[in-house]
Length: 171
Image 1 (cartoon, one colour):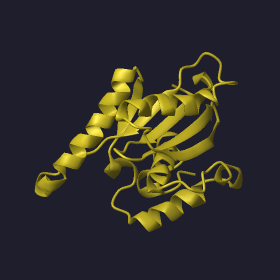
Image 2: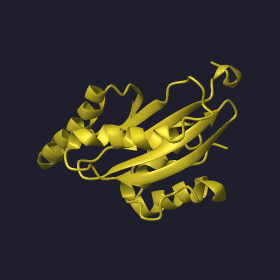
Image 3: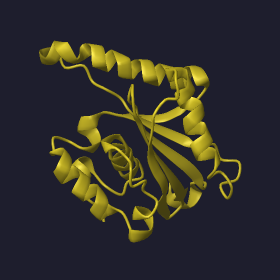
Image 4: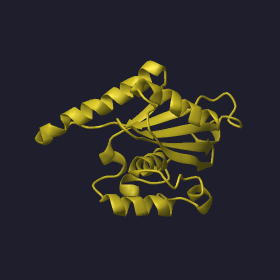
């Protein structure tokens, strides 16, 4: 599909977590994307509240994007057979994803950590994410956000085509 045929829409990138969920909201136009807001969300009480908290967040940005449904991109965990002790944590992340599905959120795409960030150290990757954002976009980043929020921004940059694997800019 060519860029001229793409409708304006919101893209919500999510780095799910059992205790903290990173969220970035992007405005997508045919020839441009812009970070509108990024933050970390802690589930209020029970995990089932998390999808409605995310919905409350992106609903505040719906004006100006017409009837186009928002698109969701989630990072999904991967089981590594050599690291069996991490399975319990991975199962918990799939529980978070399942909560969003039960809420009725339709996911456009899933990405594995290795797809969008590769094996780059966290500090290096965060610097690449910061460099990929404009000064206006940096003003949209919650200063109290956790690494989950930065991962959600990285997922959004990757999903919108502004960066490739390992956070390398595409232009």
